[in-house]
Length: 307
Image 1: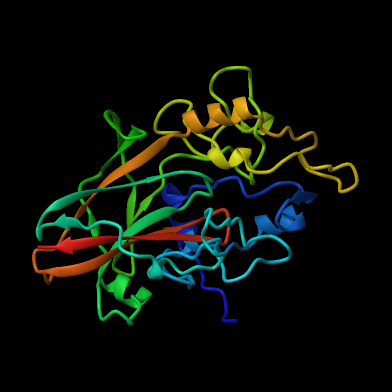
Image 2: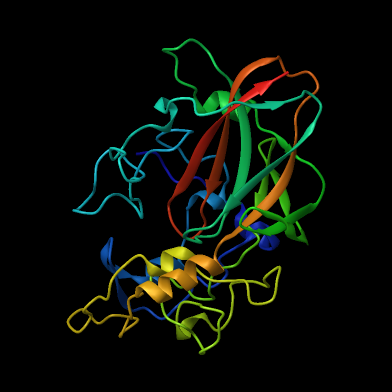
């Protein structure tokens, strides 16, 4: 394993998405990793968002479940393969579903929603398809990184474009590649409200427990902050013998889960610029999200035809 790369995020506080790393030295129970020492989170952090694009990844189009095989009885770092998909399946091997046609020199819409809000930010990249037996590489996508258009993003409810609310976007360029900070903050604790599934204050604004009274940073829309749909993933954990940091977790019932799904049916819409000199042909577009709270990279791909 190589040496950690010195992060640059600490020099750009406006790009941070997880500001509350420091908590008292105490152990908490995490369903995936077991007992974890919180104090380890308050030292030197080398998660992907600390130097966007530098962390290696399994596939620029994502791996089902996040890795080749489940680890320690759990399916990777926070990863669950979709129904009917083998764990570890490489997204580059997915069959073509539909072609989207983009013109050279145009401005196109892209969007992302949130299931588990681990902070960080996004980059969109294009790689021209090669032969049927040649897989697209991360190097190819890095060379085809797209620029964002303008300094605005939009929060949208589901597929309802009329619901869009314009918000300011925060961008930065690292090694010539432009990234956009994910604008919806998690809860203002080190876990961000993970897997709690309870109402904070009896209102319709479901959050992830008492620890979610404040966000990591100022939300773009008042009240829009928290972990996301993942707050309903895990069942209640018996913490009586593990000194849990968050005792009394309450699992989501069907009614609560439906409310959480409705609340977090939101996406972040951006515009990207398609270069004038791009060679026409068939491409893959890779969305890459580098997380700040966890050592995770999320990725997905789409079929694009450039004309």
